[in-house]
Image 1 (cartoon, one colour):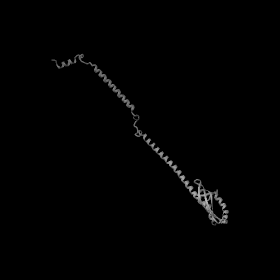
Image 2 (cartoon, one colour):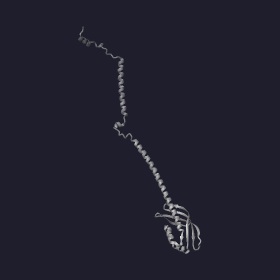
Image 3 (tube, helix red, strand yellow):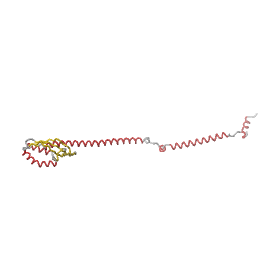
Image 4 (cartoon, one colour):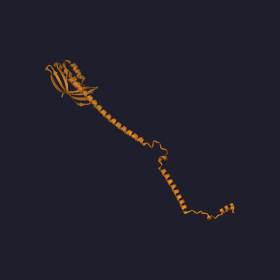
Length: 233
């Protein structure tokens, strides 16, 4: 009966040719396939890593990006909209301002013409109303409402006119029955007037009525409307 030592010796000295170390073809194919799959997997992972590196935003390479940079387009759009709205409002206000100024100028001109017209009517009635018993007051009132050329002419002729009125004991009373504006500006207005005048004198003690036309140019002097020219066309 062999001992344990002998069994170990026999096992160690056994013929290696009897040991089955062969690998079947299927096993070899499996190993090659596994190696190929592993290589392909490594290649795919490497390609994915390169793709991810290429697709990474430039901001990753350049460092952290300020939070406001990505949204910078929105504030600019908002500013542009605000600027556009402001421009529209300014344009509207500018147009309203121009229209308002024109309306104010028209109002000022209309008011000036009305004042000049009323002053001319009153002055024409003073000019055509004479009382030989009160000539000083009549002449003073006429000169007070005159200016320029007409004032100079009336001042020169008043001496002769005074004597003529006294000699004939003349009286007259004029009333403006119609008026029209011929030309107008803020400082000068020319009007056409139709005056009915009742006259009495020593030659005609009974009152006689006459109608006459009068053209008066009114000028604004020191905020007063004065007659600068009087014509009897």
